[in-house]
Amino acid sequence: MASPDFFVIGAPKAGTTALHAALARHPQLFLSPVKEPKFYLCGERPPPRREHRGPGDAHSRHEWVWRRDRYEALFAGAPEGALRGESTPFYLSDVAALRRIRDDVPAARLVAVLRDPVDRAYSNWMHLWSDGLETEPDVVRAVAAEDARRAAGWAPFWHYARLGRYGEQLAALYELFPRGQVHLLRYRDLVDTPAEAVGAVCAFLGVDSGDPPLPRPENTRAFAPDTPRTRRLARAVRAGAWAGQWLPPQVWRAAERRLLPALQRTDAARPKLTPEQRTALLAHFEADIRLLQQVTGRDYSDWLRPAGRGSFADRRTGVPAPE
Image (tube, rainbow, N blue to C red; front, side, top):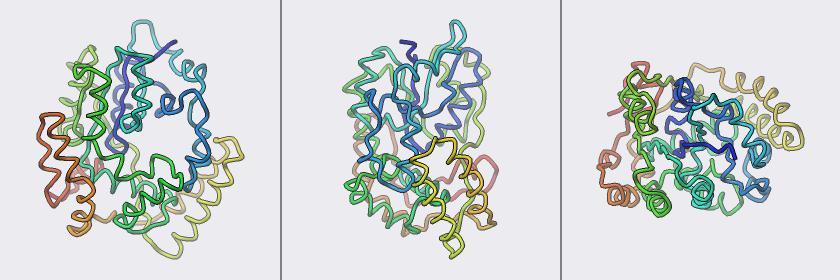
């Protein structure tokens, strides 16, 4: 198998798209042209419909690369001697996927980008809200609905709290892989000191790290305020995504590219989490943050404070982030 040599395994909405794009520009690395192929989530079977019942899930499941021959083909263009890699941030939270990677590529190197779990959950919710898929306009209520949504079969990207429980995830990961094969990168370092952060990843992978390609803001969306117009357009997006389950993925994506600009055509500023919202969300993560510190021996106590550090775009463009 033309298997990857390394994986960016987590976490969603923690800068993995920007890191993937930066590493793809390194001459000694080859990143899969499809980011998030999700191959090891699947076990070489199509993702079951019963686990993709949330808004847009039935369509997006068709984009998962679950056939081994299609997955191998993603790396066919790798130059001689280049290290091959792919980025599926959902691997970190899926023990079965990590076990499959271990069985296929036991010497794989794994990069996990960890972001303040409250900020990560808010960014995750904002992503789905601005895409017209999230129906709950309040992030606290959306996170509170997670257990019911998971029981109803909503796909992993809707698991706002579960995806940010890194203590549990890393404890499981270290049962499968030696710690020397795992590189932990903080989102704040990727944003605040990008040359050092990407250089450290390159050194971990064993390629030149002296002049690393720098990440750029990626995967950002305009905020769509909760208005009657937004709700009408969002219903159209959800209806189209539902209908798209019976069409080739590229057909719905073409339609989506026309709908989303209308939905996101707004000058409204992206709202910040209020102290009350942050306190409510932190309750979902506080115990796990303390577990994370025990598992890693690193200090993440800043995540227990009543204010986050803001988004990638805010901090890279000079817009003050909350401190």
